[in-house]
Length: 183
Image (cartoon, rainbow, N blue to C red; front, side, top):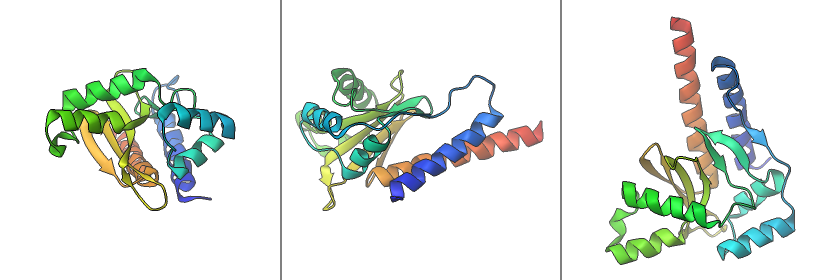
């Protein structure tokens, strides 16, 4: 099992425990069938560059993931590269001015944001995940920038991003358990 798969499995386990503590009817993670190599290729053509190997492997296992974290989904091959997610990312970057304001004048910042590849979002735009191909490791993995409830964060790659989400889920579970114990 690849490290990203182990983290995703742990996230699923923690979120299942969270679902036991929240009101009935709350949606959980929804596993989709894997994408075909052709679908992944089409998505990469749409975004204009290869996806990180770990995300390609994720798509082959599950073509996107609904209700991944805090209402946000991980985009499948049919949504990657869609203009609405690029627009959502642009509005988040403009509104929050993080984590990219340190890169220079507005024209350079605009170009940098347009190079980001959105791979997850919620409907309201308070949570957005994007690959940063300007941060490219030798193994083909890209850096990740994300905005979670107006907090901008960077991670080295998809695996590190999943580690962050796992920690956030574990903290949410601990809070729910503490509240249930107090009640």
